[in-house]
Length: 475
Image (cartoon, rainbow, N blue to C red):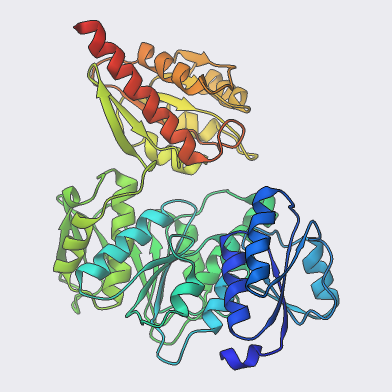
């Protein structure tokens, strides 16, 4: 769809967040008559509404449930659930609903950069960042976009073109993007998450699977997660598009994997009997098994685009993970302190726990309907102790009592600003030299912190204070 087709078109944008405001501004520039609706009316919303009004957007605060009269198209922010009254009203009026990703896809120019797309329950941001680093190392003009970094619309409409885009997509975004057709795409893993939004695991899985529809070159799946391969089998792709698996074990033909400490490619070599070296496991930071899997998925997408092996190695070496994703923040008295505050569900926490042999686990927060028996059962042999915080900590405590009854547990009721410092002190009391104090909460943070980043920062600050006090005591 070209910009001229929006001239005079009445579009309602749902949501005053980053994607909503980006969509509203882009649509105004394309000539649309834009109304933005949002259920909030606080100071932040009023300030943003004032700026959008100056840009030509009509803003209705506190009026999110009603479809503005004359609306011809709704563009929604990804977080708005499908059952929202606004969408029911749109369906009744025969009005289409697009997400910001769908809008960006339709606004691409005739020579638009192809999309290499990434989704999954966990690891999306890291994998997309790795992919962008590899593409950059190959000399390509690229950007990590979508559910990460710069909004897609800004990149798609930018004057300076890109060669290829590394696109992170959430299940929310995929739900509202029916026309998306990527060059190649990967589903990293599937585990229960956001089921309150999707309504069921089947619906969540189906939305993730949309990323494979219409793929041109490769559908990349996780050999260790058969559900991802099933999504490939169910997808309607361009003739000749290949299914390419990644595994942290030795790869079969058509897969990428690990052999004797090397990341190797048996999918894009041109010969079934050849395994081409891409990088060493040591080139991946950190070299935890789940992160090696992320690196293999990123490499598969890059190789599908024709990137040479030496660029894969250089890109992985150059990549630095974002904060709060299994990052060592310091060591005190022979104990390593690791911040994986981004591990907001049980699947992510299991990956973190599996990366360390002896762990004092700091966990808890908002469970979002999760259960913890499988997680604790799998990690029990690695646990030296556990410190529990947050509203739903009792659910984890009960799972520990059932499956790891000999593991000492500290249950902290505090929710004040000093709670994390108390938790880290308690964890230090349970840990000994060679242990890892691991913040992998398996829960969301909003009961005690603004977001997972603030929670991780509090953990790191508490570790630094612990280190300072120890140094002072030794003087």
